Structures are given as structure tokens and as C-alpha cells.
Length: 149
Image (cartoon, rainbow, N blue to C red; front, side, top):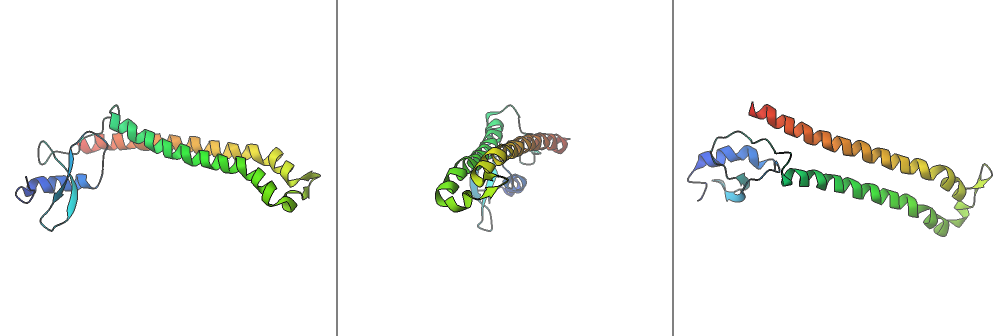
């Protein structure tokens, strides 16, 4: 059914075309009167309010897990950079790593003093950002409650 014949469906779907809530809705690409492709939702009623995302749905949990996976990968890459950075610096910059700081070579200084704080910083960032992602999801669900009332 072309949407040019039923403009009320297109008008009702325009706000939903801006955001993918992550709940089960059948999406399709439709052509409006100006020749622009939109991502529009097929709704049971043309003028229904946005539906609150179900926090127990597979799509909602998948979205949260995908965001946390991206965060985990970023933190793991930072950890690998810290972990492999010291041996690579020893291999490619032996003169710099042999300089003495407080009676220790720079290699031992970074290994003894710099490694654990770097790991703590990565862990701190991961925990804070993970909590922020969960709070963001809660705010979206609570925002769905406000839209409905």
C-alpha cells in the first residue's frame, strides 16, 4: 500500500522515523510525496502515541548489551595498548627506556609505578561509563512513561 494514498499514516510515523526505540515494530521503507525515503513504522492505529520500550524484551536487552560490548572492546584495546606498550617501547626506544629516574630505569619506573594506576584508570572509566549507559536506558524508559501520560 503506497503511503501517498493514506497521508495520515505517514504523518503519524514521522516522529517515529527519527528514533529506533528497540521494541518489536515492523519497519519498512516508504516513499512520501516528495520522493524521500523514510524509515516509518507500520502502526495499528495511525495516531497512537509512542510505545514505551519493554525493558524485558530481547531488543531492548540486545541494545544495552551492544552498547556495553562497544565499551568493553574500547577498554580492552586501551589495556592492550598499556600492556604491550612497555615491551614495544623497550624494543623500539632502548635509549629512552634506559634513562634513569630516581635510581631506576624508565622501564622499571613505568612498570612499578605507572602500570597499576593506568589499569585503575581504565577500570574506573569502564565502571563509570557502564553505569551511565544503564542510567541512560532507565531515563529512556522513564521518558517513555512521561510520553504516555
